[in-house]
Image (tube, rainbow, N blue to C red):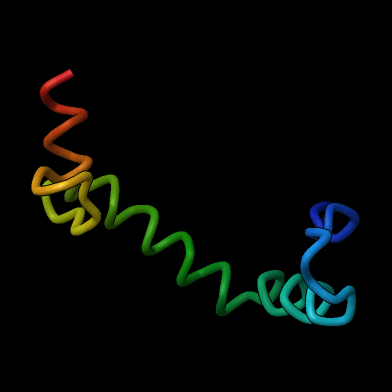
Length: 62
């Protein structure tokens, strides 16, 4: 919950606090950790791209 004090200026404080409370729940943390493991284990599956080349391909080429 350390991020709660760093609310973005463009978001209402009550919305930010609601998000922080949601992100701090156990189910959210478990899904977040699973997604992190999946992204690390399968970088080629990264669908985000910079143009027609995925970020994983860019990283591999560097």
